[in-house]
Length: 353
Image (cartoon, rainbow, N blue to C red; front, side):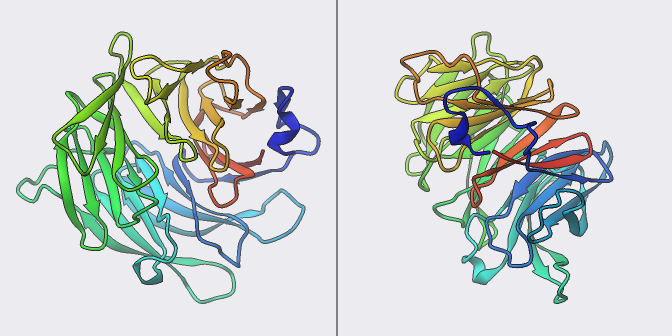
């Protein structure tokens, strides 16, 4: 079932010809990320992070057995490693050729950590993780300000930007393991950061209810491109990589996703309803400038066609999927854009769209 099949009418992924793979973890899954690197031993490779309310948490690398039409028991754990506190985000390096061919994975929580993932040499596809770096810009204190999120720059994979509850954003150089710059980005906690296409521009959202845009070439200025009506906190930010004029965000405890056009600050160009519970995650289609997926506490993942925006309001999604519990997170595969992954309860599900 392809997205094109549903351009004219709302579809449902829960169909007789569904292509859905499910993996059950030993804990609640929050963070997840698709690998960009081709792996001859598996069709898919994802990293997932636990959400356990204690210091001891974990990360697993999950792979899919190659081939096969049987959708049961196709996903397996290729490795697991300990992680302090839950990962607020996980990302694989966007460039598989950088860093001397190293297969790098980054996580945020109390600090930004970089992991090197290697094959164990057998033919079963198992992996061995090794901690490559722990990046800390506050060497003078034994305490740290937790990191809420981060983004890995696709144009320059040496650059990683992190956001923190201490109101700052930090841009890191992965190869030298040092901070290039740290800036006070918001008046209150910063909840998310995302790079635009290219290596210089990024935006952030936070508890002060604003979306702010920055340029690494002139950090003395920033641009407030949106403020929520009652200055309610904005939780997440997704930049459209196919059309960098557009951003998506949503407020805390909100059922609506806000689509912003940076050329028209202050007013959303569209608001996507459709959810009966609060939105938890959004993801732009990596191969299309006008499709976005949203997921929330109503157990629904919805795909929207924004091609008529702003001429006509976007009232209904073109695809809907009902999970068995509240969806905590969502990622759309960049390297295999026919597939979307969702996390709910202790399940990772991979859906063909």
